[in-house]
Length: 358
Image (cartoon, rainbow, N blue to C red):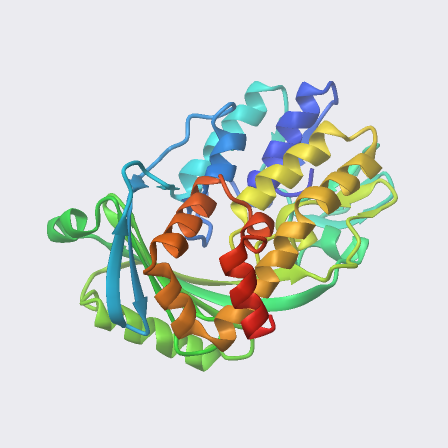
């Protein structure tokens, strides 16, 4: 495995459990920080909880929606629908699970190139492998080798702020989603006990506008004076429908394959599912491709349609979330009870998409 995030480590654990001698090559050292909102949907928990103790920082049962800072309303649920983690905690839990399954993890190890059966490290060392699973991100060497192509690229900017006692009281159990003024953009506040994760995401190529959105968002929330613990950014890339998942015995999973939900840009559930499938089917990689095609690609197609509708008519989407039908659908999606592909088949959503021609 190239890469020691959730995709690579879940793949390694699954492969080791299936009888493979497995090694993970990770360029950093666990626990390490990763730019990420850290929101776990029900679909992520379904793959995580059988194997790790999920290191939850908060469990969310209330969601505040705003439209560019205005028209605020909050919806609540009788039970949590989202679990928040810090990625250093979450990834380290997967690291521990992989090691317990017999996986060898080499940290501080930089991969320079891959080929059929060979991984070349910085310094020239070569490691041979029957199967190479790439989980080193959309800009990694495995993604380039397989030839992954992307049709959607977005820039996410994020700050981790030190939460005051008042912040912890105000935000515990509640997140905020703000639909931004720029088409397709949104911002978020995720509480994580002593920290608040505040971020925004927007189409790549609008760096100045993205930074301004984040600055305005933080100020509008009254958080501009909070100490900044971390300030980071990252690109998310969604695959083209015809992008390859494999080249010979080299296969890509998670971000390296461009597998994430286009509207929310949520990727952890896609990482865990694709990683687990690739690791489980390491002896028959076409089965992995078939499973991704059957289960993940319809969700991504639906997410693109919803993103197009949201980008054109954000006020309508905001208003829809205020309705019982809209809120129940969104809540069910967060819990993992409703896939995007199922949501767009609902009569009300189908009628709206037809109206939007999305």
